[in-house]
View 1 (cartoon, helix red, strand yellow):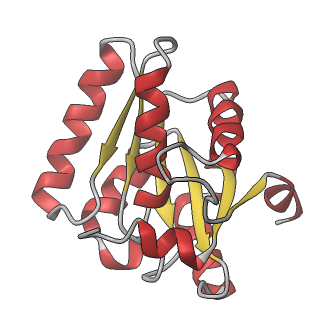
View 2 (view 1 turned 180 degrees about the vertical axis):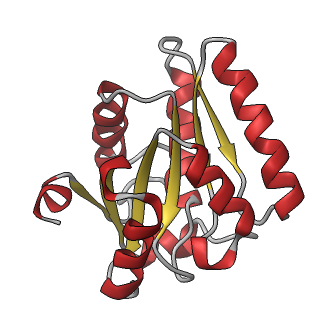
Length: 167
């Protein structure tokens, strides 16, 4: 767990107009691009955390960067059948030369997310500051395999509220 904590990043609410990507996320983006992976899944540790707090800004950064090609998918809320078909979509994107990032629901809530997490080369764990329980994070780490986790992001409540579904 000590190595994982060294790779942790805390994302606080932006103090600007909200249109630009927080500098912490830009640093995280550069850091994960340096890692070796073709498929990365953003996994919330528990129900109070959304992967959209990461995948939304990552999608914007991917649009700004021409190389390397990175496709970002938001699969939170998809059904099990759709999640299994998404594995085919991700595989096709990788075959075309892209790296793919998919945001999912917490593993305890989504069989579709489990399929995507098991497919991925790498996992980025997302926890909520003051809301995620250590036991939930540990269960998630055990489920996906500690060796596949490339980092952990701690999201402040203000960021989670701003990226909640329906906003």
